[in-house]
Image 1: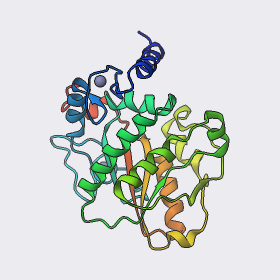
Image 2: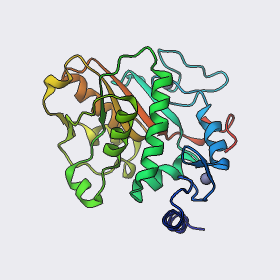
Image 3: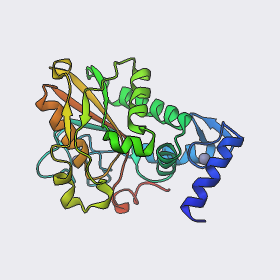
Image 4: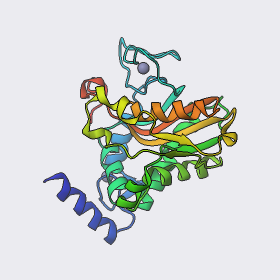
Length: 254
Ligand SMILES: [Zn+2]
Ligand SMILES: [Zn+2]
């Protein structure tokens, strides 16, 4: 079945049975939005150890400490830490695509709740002051009629009982990163963000929220902008980290 046909069928199932699984659309939801099969897969990928600095899956012989791992870029990211639910594979990939393209409010709530739990567990000693989404340009938001990263960040903020901040804005409508090779992504987003009311973020630790991290270029530019505006620390929270299949194949049975 084509992925479009699959997504369409999940959308129909969702209309008929609102309690369907957020990833596969089956209607025997058991826990936090995922059916038993998808829940098992989620547990398997969420258990994979990740580098706290770049979010890459680390395995045997590829340990990561607070300073990073062998997959970290030579010039370190401007955010201080990455929290992720797992790699961008089943069932996270399907759940994120449903959330993003089908405007599914419950999918966002369930995924936002899980991400908030991951942040609580992995940032226990961290003082978080405000939750800020990686913003979309208003033209793209208008075209899509939906701002999924904003809704996701609002859900995370509610769960963590933290204020939601809309100070970070996108001032340049850049071509989607997915169209570009990794080597051109940093230049594509350079200067794309600005901070309104920088005083509100002075000295703050910001929890920056996005759906998927691929090369990290967009989140890096957003973090650079936040820190130039006075934020002291930036923690990046993403639902999934896209990485080469070889990075997790030896650990996950997905
Ligand atoms: Zn499922
Ligand atoms: Zn790393």
